[in-house]
Image 1: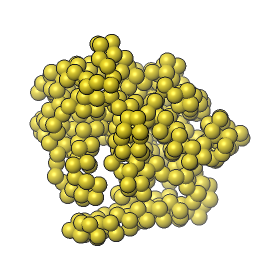
Image 2 (image 1 turned 45 degrees about the horizontal axis):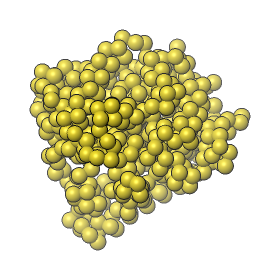
Image 3 (image 1 turned 60 degrees about the horizontal axis):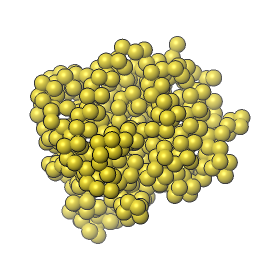
Length: 446
């Protein structure tokens, strides 16, 4: 296998903030101020509401190095938060009712006006996700124009397109493995309520229409691509669609959008980020061990696509045997099946769907073969999840049922707070274990 010199992995996480009683609190600015002069301050940012924070990590060549820095920072934030009687919640949505105070930033206002102010802020200020970043193949990103280059070297261009398509095909699996939002606003909806509310999907039972339902062009699960030229065209088309819509309905926002990078006008699961990375942004925030495990699997796959020149092939074979390899071909489901069946089953049923559990197993078996350290602690948590067929969402549902609650009725607010504290504590206690463990997950490390 060719050892790549420049692959880098990065991550972004979003956390809700609760108080020591497990209730949501609009205290993000207090926590940000308290961390301002500490190591953590450089990696913390405001989010849509004052009960959320964003935390990034300095990208490194290996999952282990990136993660160790991230865990050290996160541990510091948790310690500072505890001194302020605050906790970080590693769940995609707060289980109970909450009243977040939104930040009225111009970029947020533009999106909200296009989608509907109450609808956009109502969802985005209450949910939190995890974003995985992986550096684009060397020489494929134009840092002056902030767009993809039309690379003449065919091997590099093919690697970029195949890596992009692999991230799309992996979406139902990694969405399932990180789902942690079965409850929202005091009610049970589905296994991944955050994604049901956010994407362009429409569910009958439960009755949910995602906030981007009528704007698929800027938030739908993206189609597989064939060339960099096609990718650039789609990127430009999305911005032009947004500009045309703004000009008609919100002309005061047109100038803001006109100046913005075209890469900013897509909010779906997989995109090219203006930082020169692939970005998968369709996962719930979760316990860090689960996020590290999924990140290691993704990074191993992406490196293998480039180093072993793997070709991602949508095919009927990929329906029955997803991620099957034949020589350098990797078979994945046709896009229509991925979007209309696997995506919906992952959101509604998660591991309860035999199709989704099999899809997760096959993705795991495919990816684990590219890792030098397949027995790591974080990967162990993913393997256990797949073998048991239980995600964090399933654990939360089991806990609520055990307390005598019925899923078709409103969940007790006190129990929601109890659930929040349970996962906040689990987050706190897993970090020292992960920090002390040699997290050598990625391909290419000696």
